[in-house]
Structures are given as C-alpha cells and as structure tokens.
Amino acid sequence: MPSQSLVSVFVPYYNDQKFLNECIESILAQTYTNFELILLNHASTDASYSIAHSYTDSRIRHIELSLNYGAGGGLLLEAFLREASGVYAKLFCADDIMLPDCLETLVGYLQQHPEADVVFGDMNYVDEKGVFQNESWFQSRPYLSLNHNDVDHLKNFAIGFSCLPYPAVCLKTECLKKAFVHSSFIMLFDMALWSSLLIQGYSFKLLNYPVVNYRIHPSQVSSVQQQALAERRSYFEALSYLNIFYKITSVEWAKHIYAASFNQHFMNKLQPDDQDLIPFVIAHYYLNSEHPQYVMHGYLKLQELLNEPRYRDAVYSKFDFSIKDLRVLYSSMFIPTDMRRKQQIYRTPIKELGFGALLFLALRRVINKIKFWIGRNKTKKRHSV
Image (cartoon, rainbow, N blue to C red):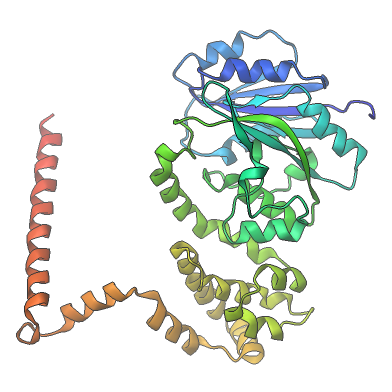
C-alpha cells in the first residue's frame, strides 16, 4: 500500500456515555495509524466529556460546543471541517464500532484508486450489547446494488431512499468541503451530502466488505421507538432537500432519474442543450410522488418557475404547458377527496344539508368547544405555577 496519508476521523457525541468508550478504543486500535481523531462534544450533560478527555493519545483533538443547538450533523460537520487537516475524512458515530482494518481498507482503496472520491464499506448490524444480528447494511437494502453507478445512486436519493451507510464512509477532505451542508438537517443530512457530491460529478465506490459494527438501540434518532419523530422531521426537511436536484445539468441523467410514464411527454422533448428546462421536468415529476411533502414541493417549485416571464415562455414553447395547466393540476389533484367533501359541506346552505352533514357539523362544533376549554384550562395551570 502507498505511504500512509493523514486521515481526519470525526466523532461528534452528545450524552453517549454508554457507548463512547468502545467507540474511541475501536478507533485507537486501528491497523492504519496515521490519523487524527477529532472528538466534538455537543454540550453533553452526562459523563461523556470525562470519558472523551480520559484518553491521552496525542492523536486526539477536542472541539467543545458550549451550547446544544438542537441541530443535526450539518452544524457539527461545519465545525469539524474548520479543524480537519487530513487528506481524507472518516465520518463516524459515537455509538458505533470500527472494525480493526476499517481505515486501512477504506483509505487504502482511495490511495490505490485516485479516480475514486468517496468509498463506502459494508456494516454489520449489532444490538445494544454488540451482538451480531446476522445481517449487514448491504443485505438489508434491496434497492441498492453493488453494481450501481453514480447516477443509479442519485436516483435512489432523488426518490427518497437512503441507501449509503454514513458510518462506513471515507472520502477526500477537499471533496467533502464542496458538499452541500445544511446546518439544521437531521434525518436527511447525509442524503443531502451524497446527492450534492454526485451531482457535482464526484465518483462513489462500494466495497462489499464490512468495516463497521452498526449498533441498533432505542435512543437512536432513526430507531423504531422514535419512528414518528423521524417521519415528522423528514417530512419538513424534504421541502428543502429536494432543491438539491435542480442543480442537475445533464439531460441524460435527468431522463434516467425521472423516467416515468406520466413524465414521458416532457422527457421526450428534452434535448441535450435544454439544461435550463430540467427543473421544470423534475418539479412535474414530484407532483405524482407517493410522498405528500414531495407533491407539495413540486407545486411550490412550479409556481416559482412559472412566475418568471422568460422561463414561463420557454416552458410553453417547449412543452405547451402554462400557468393555466398548473392551475388545473392543483385544482383537481392537490386537495384530498375528504377535504373537498368537507369544503362542500361548509359552502352548502344549512336548509339543503342532509342529516349526515348536519351531524358532522354538530360533532365538529362540540369537539372544537372541548379543545378550547382544555386549552384554556392548561393555560390557567401554567400561569398558576
């Protein structure tokens, strides 16, 4: 293997006293030794700070945040990049375990294949106690193939699949510095990173070899116990996340990623020099998504695009699509059937309503009254404390 280049290993932690020891020791025990370990304390309130500072290895550096900003990986990654001095960056999580040859495998591949910018290994699932769960990350991702090329990966991200394992990644630091980093993202933070790099043309590689033990436990943000919270966060973040894909400039890539029967009319008319019209085709694609937040995003983006006179003219000239067509779409598709039914009830004179509709309105009024009095009592209790 070529001479060892310096690797910056990044481990942010917040109240990870249960797992932090094992994480740090797995890094210090790596067969690849030329690294700096940057530990970022996100204002922990447990013993994590003491654990992190109990190690005297000269390769360890510390970043201390005085406040917990409640943000995801983006904010923390920005702090890491200001300090990192390695040729390569190894991103990691405080509750996971590096297998002994993790750095040697990933960094060795990047050194031997300079055309590659980002490399991912596989991860073994382990439980809270570190017991192997007889499955790996790659095995649990049916929509991920080791034969996927970069545009295939980007297609997965564009339709909402998180398919590449963040704790098993290693990449060129100069490449990471050009990634899109959203400070407030939690659930879609890594998907935004990888999507932005793929769009910029950086090369991704997958190694069918486990380099990490990925721990599954209840306090994870992505755990089953916190699924409802994760879904709410993802719903909100998606409205901004999808903006990344409007930076796609290859018509060929757009046709591969957003190929669908309902979009084919527009795709067939796209020519190689129609890069400026790619955002319209992408936004229209999202109108037919199974994810409500993607649909909302699509309508908002189309409104934005068609609000600009020159772009509006170009869309009409190429696709025969106008503001009128958009209005027809959101008038007939956007409002769910049950909501349209309720609106019809409210618009109909009382004398013309049937018994079922009158009962609905009566119950609705009672429920609203109950909610009002409950809210009022809660307010009184808060003020009396």
